[in-house]
Length: 141
Image (tube, rainbow, N blue to C red; front, side):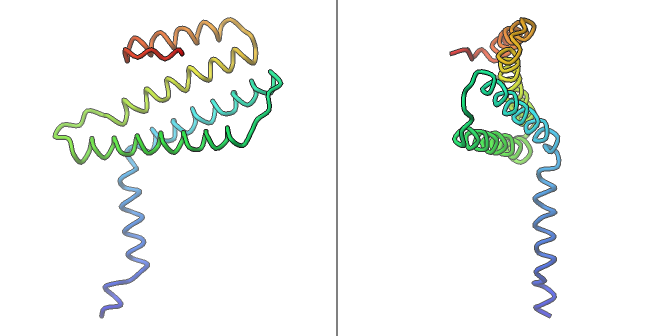
């Protein structure tokens, strides 16, 4: 009787189903986040290669840590939005939009470094201006 109540396979199945059920609404946000970070990483590697700079494992670790931190932030905001707020305001979606916008800025900057094409410089400045207007935060160092 006890063995049927504490069936390890069922417990794992319920645990995994519960976790996947929590992350399902933000799955597409996390997917886009991975795409933007991956594109930034690839264009950054190509740009560094074009400039004769070496790609180090320290930069790979930095990208993995950045991806983990972004994912964690979006997941926590989703938890706050769904379980702690009376009215859902889409905190995870707002956050992922900002993160992807900043990653897009970096991708465009890398494309300019690779090609030298002024279109990418214009798009970089346009993206920077829009992000700063919408957030009120100055991004450029």
